[in-house]
Length: 369
Image 1 (tube, rainbow, N blue to C red):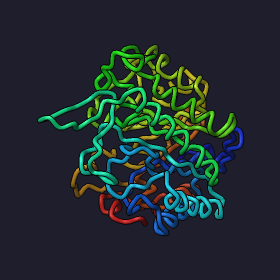
Image 2: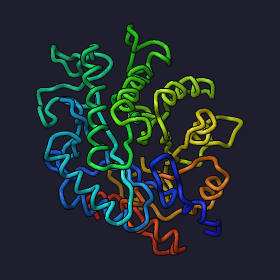
Image 3: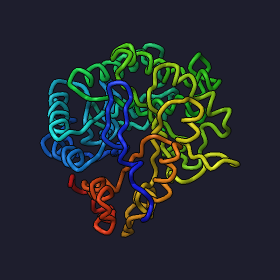
Image 4: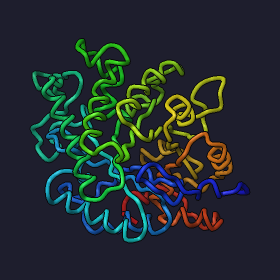
């Protein structure tokens, strides 16, 4: 790697958010919080990344205080006295070594299955009902349900600010609840939350607005979105620049400060006729700072590791990433699997120790290294 790494280690300022560099730890579900409570192992996991040079840590997805928010075992909650006390320890540990941190606030929506903790009798909640053999598998959300979830996100954001987090991220990507309202494949409602792109974005706009009211005008709000979905990796929420603008503008106007633009491969152009990736297009459309993400620093994309495999992702050249960052295509760079396996990734890049960066395999997912 021969490119100048200084763009990656330039400071970043946005209101009260002051970062020492442009490296963001991407949110990655780890399933190491029994009963939804992050313990000392989780504290140390995040502290190690902060002390090794990550500018901003975005935590794994944390579930808001709604009965159907959780979809997986041992993921952390962001509600309840015990869970919030655990997160306070994480915040304090990260701050003690000079780091900055934001929780990712999450509701899985219709991905939830019956039998999932904390109450196995609660079905998934989503834009549309799903019934099979007389059993409600997905509860189609009423207007009251929608407002309950909006309030849960707002309360989580307020709690995050009160216990010292530096920002919050709303998970609006990858086929989870907020995204389910965006996507016409999962939202065929006939009320004001369905139909047009504007209507399908209404739920997210209400969440963003409520969060903004809860945290005040200056507290940083990050919003993560994706074109692709877990259910369809080729899906395109907004297949043209005009549709992407129609999608993004209401979210920006509602109070998003930073967009986190999820791609499978950050180097791929988003639309024909332009080399810009999704973050580049989003930055141009909204004028807001943007985070790029997608297989940064590795030679194999993450989907190859979603199934049992012996593959190993080796360190990849980041010269192109550095060049695009230096040119201002995007503002921040989220690093995922490379930081799971190697907490010192940022320091090693800064020091030019590329040969020392650890390769990634599925084995890394078994522990909180």
